[in-house]
Length: 312
Image 1 (cartoon, rainbow, N blue to C red):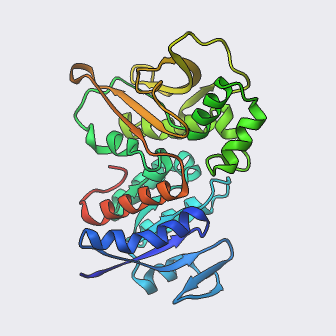
Image 2: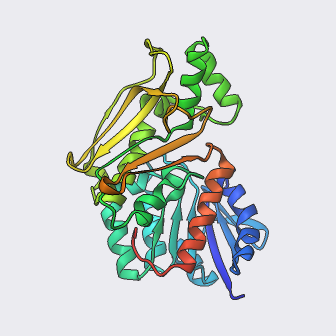
C-alpha cells in the first residue's frame, strides 16, 4: 500500500480520536493512512516530538500530505478558512469537522477545491456519525428533494427528554455535560443555532444555497410546553426547496412512532422528502468525539478513494 500522509489540525478529543482510528480503519480498506503531523494552536508535533508551529504550506509540501484534516473549534477565527484554502492550493483534500469557515467561505472553498481538483468533505460538521451529509451530497443526487427536516443536535434531544421527565433545565443541561454530550457552553445547542448551522450546510449541499446568505429563524429551549399524549417534544430544523435561503428551527411535538419522535437521548435523525420517490430518512449516530472522528475517517477514505472535487 502506498502511504497517504495526513496533516491534522486539532488535538482535542475529536482530533485525538481521529489520530487513533484513521490508520487502523484505513488498512481495513486497503489504504495506508498516516498522520504525519499534528498542529495545535501554537505548536505542532512531527515524528513524536512537539515543536514550534511552522508555515502550513511548507509543512504540506515537506510531508507530501494528501489530506488536511481539521478538528478545531468553530471560534470565529479565520485560521480554519485560511489553512483549508492553503491546503487545497497545495493539492491536499480537506476533511473537516469545523463549521465556521464552511459558513463564511463556502464559495471560495468550492472554487479553490475545483481548481485544484480536490474535494472538501464535511460529514463531521453536519451530523458526526450520522451520514446526513452523504445523503445530501451524493446519495440523493438526481432525486427531487423538496424538503429536509431533522433533529441534528444531540444535546437538544437529551435535554427535552429530561424536561419531559420533570427535570429542570439547569439539571438537564448539567447531566448532558457530565455525559459528554453537551459542550461547556450549551447556548448554541439550546438556542437552535447549532441545528441551524448544520441545516445551512445540508441546504448548500442539496440545493446550492450560499450558507452565508441563508436566513435563520430559531426558537430556543427554555421550558416544556404542553405536549399531546403519544408525542415527544423535539427541536426540529427544516428547509424547503421552494422557500430558498431560509432555515427554521422550532420546537415541535412529534408522534412517538415517527422517525423524529422515536429518538432517545442524544440520537439524531434527518428525513428527506424526495417527491415521487417518497421519504428517505437516516437516524442514530449519537453525539460524541468518537462519532465525529469516525465521520472524519469515513470522509478521509472517501476523499482518497473517490474521484470527486469541490463539495460534490
